[in-house]
Length: 113
Image (cartoon, rainbow, N blue to C red):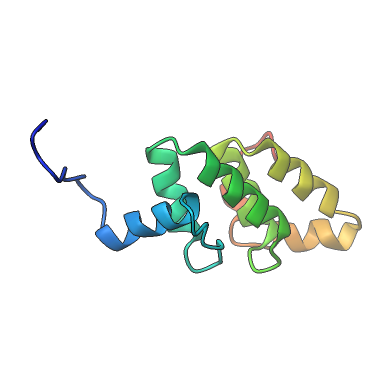
């Protein structure tokens, strides 16, 4: 393995790994709704803190991912800033009701609910 030019990473598609590299290396490709889950999974698997931080901030700033999904990801990946942001976004009883009807609400822990 020391003399190999390439190392195979099981269960990782080349195009997905390239997305991760594009997020953290000089191009610093913007994270968007189409790639964030792929990059998040790989960043977590390979412990790439820069990518994890960028994804957390992306989730805090996007309107294209609903609050319950953001809260579930905050629980799963220990995104404390994102969780705080989600709770702060619930300003009215209607916001809370909308959250409860989200498909991801049932996946939240009892503590978060």
